[in-house]
Amino acid sequence: MRQAVTMDRSPTAHRVLLATLFALLALAGAVLPVGAAQAAEQVCVADASTGCINGTIKTAAGAPAVGIVLTVAGSDGEHIATTGADGRWSVAVTAAGEYTVSLDETTLPAGETLRDPSKNPRTVTAEVGNTTGALFPLGAPTAAPAPSDGATSADGTTGADAAVGTPTGSESGGGVSWLRVGQQATSGLIFGILLALASVGLSLIYGTTGLSNFAHGEQVTLGGILAYVGCQTLGLPLLVSGIIAVAIAAASGWFQDAVLWHPLRRRRVGTTQQMIVTIGLSMALQYSYQYFFGGGALRIVTENPTMLSLGQIRVTLHSLISVIIAVLVLAGVAYFLLKTRIGRATRAVSDNPALAAASGINVEGVIRMVWTLGAGLAGLGGVLMGLYLNATSWNMGGALLLLMFAAVTLGGLGAAFGALVGSLVIGLVVEMSSLVIPSDMRYAGALLILILVLLLRPQGILGRAERIG
Image (cartoon, rainbow, N blue to C red; front, side, top):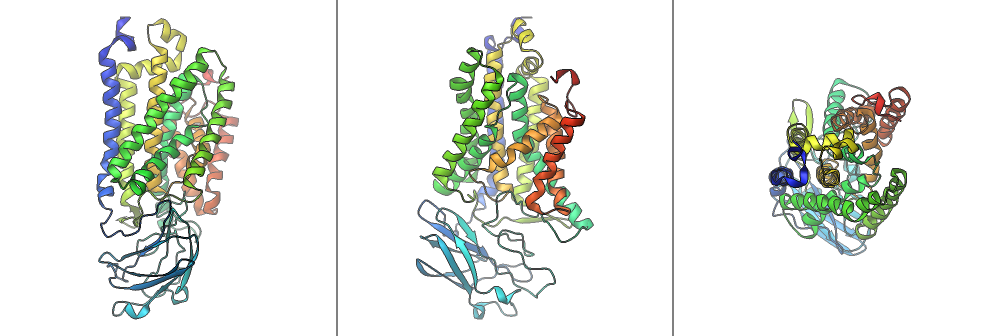
């Protein structure tokens, strides 16, 4: 019986762990169709010395507008671009600053006009290493104002300089309607599912070690930045970049525990002191990301996302595939925790580490595995969140960290399934709140929930009261 629960003595247990990690990486590879969609016509790719200004122009009927000539003028001279067979155009610039983008209306297809002629020419601000969008919607003028760069236009395109944290299809302002309620609820479910990938790992780490890891958000950022480096700097397909990003993120979790957290536990350093170390590590990683990759948005995929219509609800292909991957991975984690010996050992360590050790479970081995799995989940969440939010950045994980803590607290501290439930609630609150408050304030509702939970039910939805205090 003792041998049946001893992790370090069973070769089968190690094979199960390796198979679980391999399945996690393989599921990330399901984004191959997205990566393969990067067209060969894409001329400009932002790098350390080049910035891009681009866009997609479609006719009023939604077909690609071919052969339209645009002129981009700025500090590094004048550039000419022509829309290709897919309606896309791009220009490479070598200096940061303001650029004037002019569309030659004489080259518009027969019968087509600019929806808002007053915005031709338009001025955009370009940065070296980043991509900036300039939109020129075609068709008859409408009562609604034309979308600004970064917002979703009526033809299904989005500005390439969309702000991090603004998912495609999510809207704010403009009054409440059933269509907007459905759109925001859909966005909330997608956001909650993707947030759960990172929250579950954070909850597992807290459950097995009692440590609130304030550097967990930087694991999310790491996944997104590694995917960006793979796609935009190394020119790898999104499939390969995603797998490498998840693998390196998981390896970083193993490395952190091996060189930092395990020695601190061995020296019997308290969890409060360890938590302070995580805060310092978070700051060091954040500003390292900013130093090496700049403070602007980093687009993993520079092409405009493909929009899908589910009735009157719009989602991007990126979002749909990301949700499928996230659901499959979360289902795999649930199976791992409930049906495998290592998963049962993990839950035993979470409930009572001393009793688990007395039962023959290798507690340190379980904790090492949890750090690896949690970091891998966070890295995958960073890749998928970067696609959903249109871009990643040096502080994306930091901005999401309080939402992750809110989700973990709402669901129940240390309860992995509670983190999933809490993430769905937080995701819905964040997106639905945009119906009544500006989108810039949408995270405030989630933090208000965190305060109310701590006041009224500190053990959370699935937590147990005797575990608090």
